[in-house]
Image 1 (cartoon, rainbow, N blue to C red):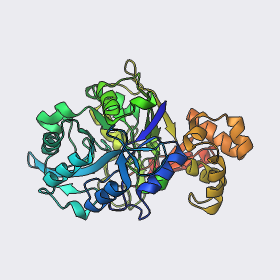
Image 2: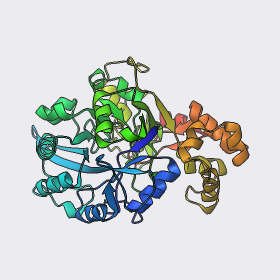
Image 3: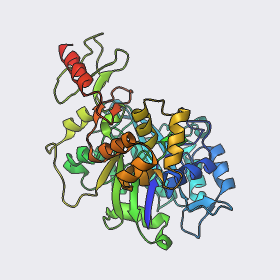
Length: 418
């Protein structure tokens, strides 16, 4: 059985997240997209945990949960993102971590401990005055089967390797608790090949998740597992990740990193960006302020392998553009417009979004939509697309039909002149 998992989600109680997010909505969105296993997100928030307790029940003692009274095959895994802010050798460090837990009881016990370090009700993604190492130690004191890994590891502001407050190694960040870290989340601005360039990361399983702030963004990155349905459990999933088991972890579905909002260096206010591989500019030529170093810059700083290096027996990956974005790009309509939603519903009426994006025959897609949409999906699968990379908090711009190649050259020339 193919199991597509998105571990990193949020509730409506997390800052800057949609007020429409609820557990029933997560199930419906998961079914539409083709997701089997989804994180609850935000279990540290007392109101969201109350809803989890009210609406979910453990499924057959597996450590996974389902909607009470529902026949849906979507399963939940208890998850939460936690921000740790602490002083390390005179510098302030800010690291986001993703926590997975096997039971409501262990979540409640953990929340009781974490409440000493910050206000859990203030945000679904709480900010705690505790080091990343202390967080991991506390988690494992409460639950020996917990699973912890750094969220969006390269994000400048809150990634474990981020350019603004990150570390140069996992050991430096988690100290003696690094022994409990088996994975890292690539985030939206990096992909597998970028992470393969750092040999010290070979021991960790790469995971990609949506970090969604609205139901529409669910599954924009995910992980594909293969196992018998009756074997699906919290332990079988986390053990496969710990062992980096390629017989179980079949694929990582990733965002095009150039579309992520921290890929290039840049300055948001002046709308200036630059490729760190072709330029050594460090200050904005418009206003003189320091550029925000993006993920590509940071990867290059830590890399000890050349671009294109592939480790032995890597877990395969595929890059996608969410289906509504595909339709919007082709039709030149708003991503959440009525016109785009109508075509989206037609395409997902008999197949899941992942089926359409990754598996359905291109000719079939053309018959069920348009020739241009089918061409865009074909280009997405092959990587034959044009992207104006994101930077400093601004998402990249995708052109799936390569209509802007000439414009892109003009933009590159303008940047060089600046």
